[in-house]
Amino acid sequence: MTEDDITQVKNYLLNLQDQICAALETQEPEARFIEDAWQREEGGGGRTRVLSNGKVFEQGGVNFSHVSGFNLPPSATAKRPELANRQYEAMGVSLVIHPRNPYVPTSHANVRFFIAKKDGEPTIWWFGGGFDLTPFYPFKEDVLHWHQTAREACLPFGHDKYVQYKKWCDDYFFLKHRNETRGVGGLFFDDLNQPDFPQAFGFMQSVGDHYIPAYLPIVEKRKDTPYGERERNFQLYRRGRYVEFNLVYDRGTLFGLQSGGRTESILMSMPPVAHWQYNWQAEPGSPEAELYECYLKPQNWLDT
Image 1: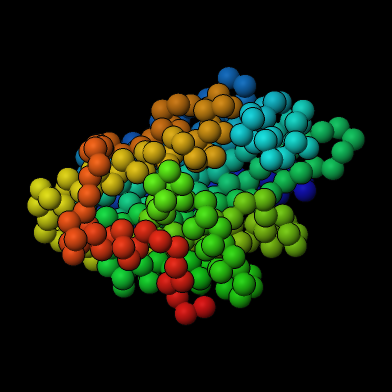
Image 2 (image 1 turned 60 degrees about the vertical axis):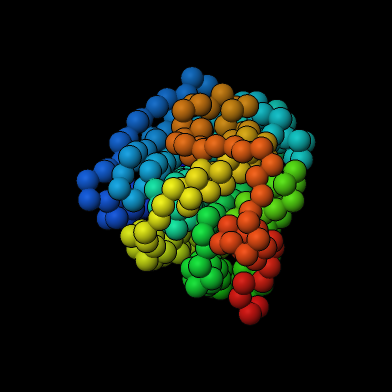
C-alpha cells in the first residue's frame, strides 16, 4: 500500500462522481446538480452534489467524501476491535436517487475505501460498496436487467461473486421489524482486500462503473409512464420504509453521524417527501399487493 495507490483510488472516485452526475443530467431538460464543497474539522472533507425538483428526479444526491481522524466511531469498531486507536482515512462515493414518477425505482449506490494505520503494525485496508434498487411498481424485465448488469460487474472476478454479494445485499437491506427487503436487491460487499490491492480495487471500480448501465435504461423506459394520486400516495408511503432503514440499520449513516461528518451530506439520502399511515394494508390482487407478495422477498432473479 503506497500513497500512489491511495491517490489512484481518490482520482477514480472523483471521476466516478463526475460521470454519474453527467449521465443522470441527460434525463433532465433543465435541472442540474448543485455542488457544495465542505471541510471537516478533524480532517478531510468532500463535495456534495444535489439535484432538486427535476422533471424526472424529485431529488438526487451524489456525494464524494474523504475524511480522516484518530478515533474511529463505535459503528466501525464494534465488529472490528483491532481498529481501535488507529489513524484512519475513509473515502467514497455514495448516491441515492429519488425519482418523481412512481414507476421509476429509487436507486442507491456506494463504493468506498478504508485505511487504518498504527505505528509498528501492518496497515489495515479494504474496499466496500454495491448498488440496490427499490421499486414501487416493479416490472420484472427491469429487475432482471438490474441483476444481469450486477452479474456482469462480477463475472471478471469469479463466477461465484455475484451469488455471494447478491445474498449479502439481500441480508443487509432487510428491515427486520417489517420482515421485508427494502427492494429487489443488487450487490453488497465489504472488507474486501483479497487476493491483493489491484484485484480488490478493480472489483470496486467494476461495481461503480456498472451502476449507470444498470439504472439509466430503467429510468428512460419508465419516466413517462402515466400515474395518478393513488400511485403517488403509495410511492410516498413506501419511501417511509427507506427512511426507516437508513435511520435504524444503515452502517454508512451511523458512521457518518458518529464520526462527526457533515449532517446535511449524510442525510441527503432521505427522500424529499414521505409519509406513514397506520396499519395500511394493500388491497388483495392490486399492483401494490404484488410488490409485497412477489418482490419484497429474497429470491434468485437469474438462473444462477
